[in-house]
Picture 1 (cartoon, helix red, strand yellow):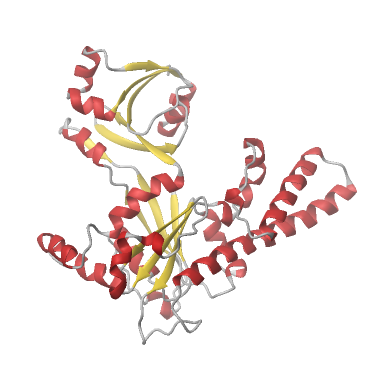
Picture 2 (cartoon, rainbow, N blue to C red):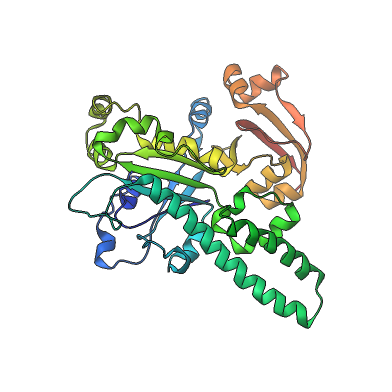
Amino acid sequence: MNLTIFGYSKTGKTTLFNLLTGAAVEVKAYDDGKKEANQRTCLLPDYRLDRIASLYPDKKKVNASMEIVDLAGISYGEVKTSVYLSALRLADGLVHVIRGFIDPQIPHPKGRISPRDDLAFMEEELILADLVSVSARLEKLEKDLRKAKNPEGEKEKELLSLFRAALEEGKPIRELSFSGADEKRVRSFAFLSQKPLLHLVNVDETDIPLIESPREIYPALKPGTDILAFCGKVEAEILELEEGEKKAFLAEYGLRELSSEKFYRTIPGLLGIISFFTIGKNEVRAWVIPQKSEASQAAGAIHSDIERGFIRAEVIPSDRLLELGSWQAAKDRGAVRLEGKEYIVQDGDVIYFRFAA
């Protein structure tokens, strides 16, 4: 799973990358002509995994993880031609950093600080980038279909024509409804306006109260998007403190928690993913799968052999397991259910898969 941080120049993207990953990348690194993206694998915090692992202190705890990528700044109006376009298309989710802070040493390219305008402008740019891709593909399809009939090509043309009409009206692809078969037809395009989009506004110290109510910044959010706020300058200072001092400084600024905690709590819902847990011989582990995944698909997240040889799943909600104290105690109480391959896995399930080798 890949989350890509992007946005216009001088918004605090690398500061956010450091806050989320614990990295210490020089925030001015891109000023020196650096082109390669910053990248780091991060463990997904999960208090349920922590509590389950505490029942088995002899086993290793293994969190689910994701890749977080930090791209260099993009100039206004250039998303559709950006050298980073391919990196954006590879992302499972996009994290757009928006400038909301005032700094006379860093003039804003448009002459004024307006998070609402920058947010709206970037969403328009993502739509335009997709419109360019759709139009180019339709032009080629129409030429090919004039030479020879192709039923699959006709279906693709029909679908992309619908996309083009929506994009021309300023509607992102994520707001459209289409079948699973149509999803497969367009998956390779990796449309930007189809991806989950999280806006993160880097606010000024004077606007710190907005961190607790970020929707005041932009109330008209579109489906498949969300908004959070952080104060990069203040949080970067707090993270340099000793652990015991952090809470005191957070309280002094009126902050209940660090932005990383809100971020990782928000991401599963935005990406449409859930977690399930397994208790193995040597480890207690969290796995991430799409919402509404069947048990056989969850088994495949562990290993394709388990999915192919699936027999049944033994399932218990994590809160019930914690209440009873162990897997064996749960089985003795009849709390572990037997489910087939079509069972829809629920967030927080603890599962033991039986399969034929």
